[in-house]
Length: 159
Image (cartoon, rainbow, N blue to C red):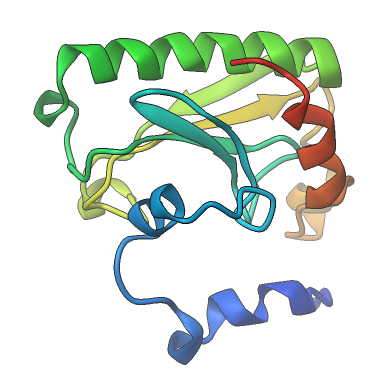
């Protein structure tokens, strides 16, 4: 197996560095949006970049309400979240020329939810050729833009 140097992931990987409590509740309460990579706050939800993205522009839309299922949300919350998904896709398509998107919700730990107790939607931009020889042969995914640069590019939009 080949190794790739990614020291920025160390604080995520080691157990003792993991924060207590709910990531989304903490970010919702804090006001340091740039530090937390929060792009926009709405009445019922907020948008934040994923600190460990699968692709450039990978972001998450989270309700302020701490629930683990869609049916536990109020209709207004669900409506705003999915309207926000549409606006996010339009803005990323415009700014980053995304050709497609993976949009998903992992509901429950058995479905792969990393934060199972607080539902959130992942939006992952895709481009033709973004799966190239690196992940297929080298088992390595290349993220070609720094999070800070992606944050600045997407922060300017209204959602």
